[in-house]
Length: 400
Image (tube, rainbow, N blue to C red; front, side, top):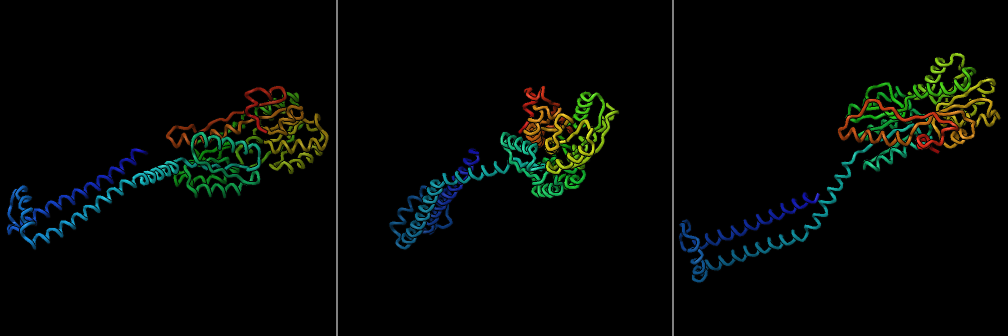
């Protein structure tokens, strides 16, 4: 930056010097020309020294020519003085010019930082608030600009689509999105691709190959683990109630259907009695109460995210059926982890939302810097219960 400022200053100095040299040269030529003219030899060629000698005699002996000569000399001297003043002023103002150049360069450097836009699923869901913290930490560490946006209501696909369209219109360097509706976002992703904006998916994927990468938990594998654990605990028998957080996101579909399919494969005598959907804890509470009243002998109730689990826990408490039905779930949060420690929840799958937020921003920056990024990246997950909840590798993935 400094070298570029010195370069500009040198150019200004050189320009002033060229002007000064031009004036001096003109002054010499004018003096020589007048000396020759006043001797009646306008077009003669005489040595420069001789002209200078004759110039003195001319000023002394030729009154009219001398007066004219003096006027021209005075005028030229005045011009010369003005040039010298301008040069001095130019040198005096160079620090200000340098300061201006510095500010311009700093502005260029700031605007040159990558602008990453994140479209998340929820502004209030604790899991996604933890993702936001990871995104912000990565942006700070990597020196990039971050714009984070998420619907005020969890699972509001229409609101997220509007936010996604706004992000594309802003033309950031990259967009990271945890898509609520895996189908509906594809058209906007195509628009982003058409204007050269790379897309990075996290939390779940979409039905398109447009994204550069998808960073997400392998929910099919995770739900298989969950089905295996609960089936073993129940001896392969009993009815199961399922509440999913949505039917549109890829992880919503896979956590519900993946668990049902794994349970059917591993423990065919465990039957799914009912499947309902909501991502609103208050609504889930009423759904869960209705399900447990309808199926009082159900052995298991499963929720696919922390909002759902919180609603289920409220229902279990209100009905007073702690210990009579086994609760299994996804994610963490204080209400869920407290219930795991108390034994109200048999076990859950925890992900690493902070790491997901951090890593997806980092992958976007790496890609913009020319690095190769895998098309699919598995995020960390663990099955946890009262026995292993405080293990260091699990504890670092939990959030309040």
